Every structure is written in structure tokens, then in C-alpha cells.
Length: 147
Image (cartoon, rainbow, N blue to C red; front, side):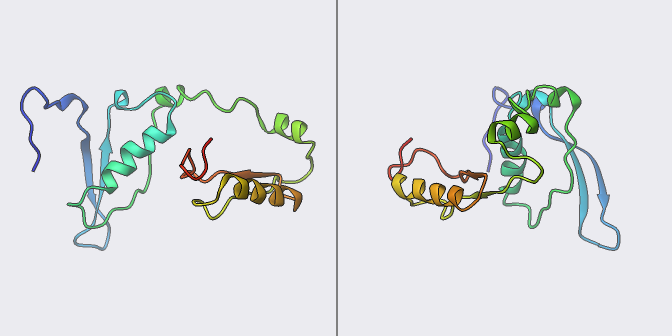
């Protein structure tokens, strides 16, 4: 049950299903084409875009099964992304690594390591030949490992 009234109802920013096609050779599956107003998304934020579309839609309990097939992002929104501060050439020069792909990894387990143990995993990975290690997206300033 959703409670609303005219004060909080806003059709302007509501998602719009502009096309629905049956999936070939099925009787109960459909492709739904859904459009969102660009003003709903924070400029230059892939995290906001994916959380808004994928997080909210995939969490909708009334849908039995769902798969994202494609996302078409307007050029006007793409232009809000500034891109990386440096490119691959600058990174190769900074790291003095040329003529091969960079080799990286994500620290595991992703949660529960102390700061000291996390640092040890990074150190061992770099000493073992990795070019970089990436924090898992779940890592933030938790009580067991403050930033």
C-alpha cells in the first residue's frame, strides 16, 4: 500500500513505460522499455544512476523475475561525467610499467580485516607482483578499520 495525496504525487518525474514487446516464443515474458527524466539523476554519478535504476527496480517485490538487458544513457547526461583525472599513459609513466597489461586484484575477505591485516594483504600482493589492489565497494570506515 502506498499513501499519497496531491501534495506528494508528482507525475513529472514518474518512470514511463513507452513500449512493451512480447519475448519471442514465450507466453508470459516481455521486454519493457522504460524512460526516466534526466533530472532524477545526480550529474556525473554512476553510483546514483545504477542505484536509482537497478536498486529500486530490482527491489520491487511485485515483479517475479527481472533482467536488465540494456541501458541507453542520453548524451546530455554523459557529458556531466568529467572522466578520470589521468589516462593510461600517465598511469604507466607514474608506475613505470610499459608493454603489458596492468595486473590487479580486490582484497578478500572484503569485510572483517583489521587495518593492520588489510595493509599486510596489500603489501604481500604488491610484493608478489600485482600492480595495484582495489578496495571492495563494501569497504568504508567501519569500527574494525577506520579511515
